[in-house]
Amino acid sequence: MIIARGEKTYITELQREQVNAMELWGKHKDPLFHSYNFPKMTEKQKDYWYRNKAKSFTKRCFGVCNLEDSLVGYIALRNIGWIKRTSELGIVFDPEQVNKGYGTDSLKIFLDYYFTSMKMKQLNLKVALFNKRAQQCYKNCGFEVKEIIYDEFEDQELPVFEEEALLEYRDFFKKEGTILLSRFKNMYITREMYLLDK
Image (cartoon, rainbow, N blue to C red; front, side):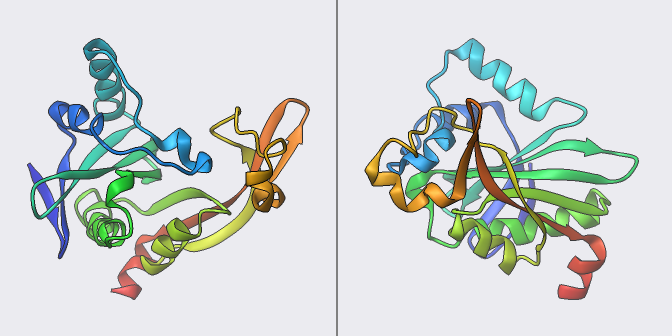
């Protein structure tokens, strides 16, 4: 079922068959984004992934399709607090479909659904400081920076301090013992901020 339509995309409740489409997505070449590549999974693993993302009380997941009906990404909510009406945002897109305006378009229509239909009060997110493209998308959608923090990086195997090709990114990372930490921006938008920006 389509829950929102934009100029370039539309959003659906995540369907099980859409998980199969994610397996066909391209791969990020940049090692900083390898953890966003959709993994190869068995049918049983895909069933579990779908149930975990879409059928949980504290999580919801939505498919993002372009106007040619191709699945180009998904939007996830986690740590949903139904009493405080808050949650955390996660977005993943097919690497072959970035820089086409799909992210900004889908997030703008999703925010309307989130604050109007779901009646939520605040949406939080965490974005890596080196991920300039995502930060610009969030800024365009009305998110503001709350703080900059160090947090555990998704890909603990990233050889950022070993490989010369990653030299320019070293300032974004540090090691605490064996744990690789990266600098992140915590960003947020409230219903009031969203309505003022409309």
